[in-house]
Image (cartoon, rainbow, N blue to C red; front, side):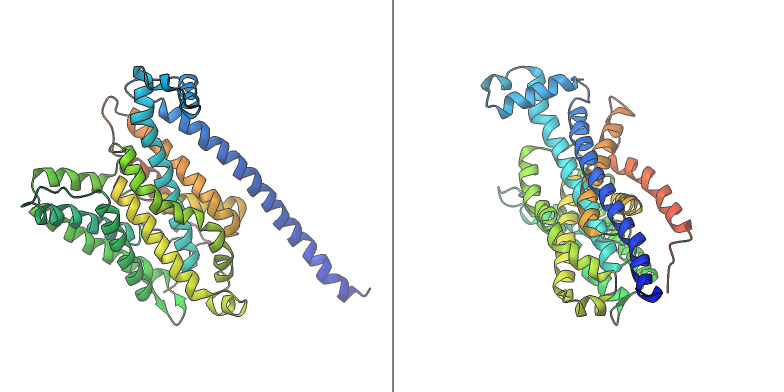
Length: 368
């Protein structure tokens, strides 16, 4: 074999070794984060005004799974099953949904600065949720009907979908997305949504104003089984569709034209990604309020660890987002106990310095 023939094989060997090494790291991380997520959930269920040990929490949950009717007796069981468990499950779902939404937007825009909170998608969803609360209550004021909770995810979904579509249309020209335009358009959309939300707050009564304050700060305090049952069918499709989107997003990293020539249905992938992001962000905002920075912190850290392969990036982002939000909820409950700090403050305190660090890194370029 000539030297020219041996060179491609010699060059491919280190590359294949790097890919295999990152894949092994990704699989180890997948197992490690799954275990960490389970353990953190048990710890989170035991935290609060009434402290319950992890062993006791595990015993109660195991008895409930086994169908033991006596599990419903006692104070600890009532706290675990009716208050803490739906709260932690909601935190896991919302955290996973926001992190995967961030990873999808970064893959769609081909830039690690994309995030539903930073580019106005969450603000648009929050505006629609606020309009649903204020205008929906006024529309039903003369009747005996109450605004169904399912109306909030639907309204927030519509707001998130419109914001995502407007953002994509503004930032994309001839198949190329300018991240500078995306960020500036996101700031404008967020400012407009904030102004309209302020107008709705001015027009609202005392009860509606309290609800609007909840959206602006974010909290898992209103979690319940009924709310969880309304949110789960909206966020779960995003998590289940991750294997279907991974190959397409990997192809989009090369560019839309290149992905099309590889046989990837580009327009279908883009439409599905936008739809799922709007669904997940809308449901998250409707159930937990505006919680920022999870969609940029988690996917970027995962990408630094295992690389840009979305087959690993998406599931690891889901686990990382779930862990981060539940951990932030524990901090929010304990740092000013017996009061409760809004969880959006905790995630902003973590995410804002990280975003500044990301902007200052030389490897991230903002093109105009």
